[in-house]
Length: 94
Image (cartoon, rainbow, N blue to C red; front, side):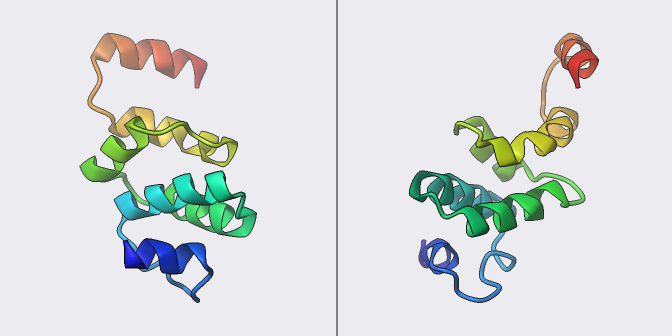
């Protein structure tokens, strides 16, 4: 939690040192607190990630997504453990 608080208050490079699932929490809190620069920085880290961990997928499933995370949706759908039928439906709109 200390690392998340440090990231929210702009400690230099603190967001980039967090594991993915904690970056999700930074996004959630930064969105609530309207900390736009931190929100964008954290969102970009997830969007540019090579893959999403299971902990990250779980954390993303448990939150309302701010608009800055919408570019992450295709990677989320590819990584998520969902049925092939649902994947086809979602793939048609992505």
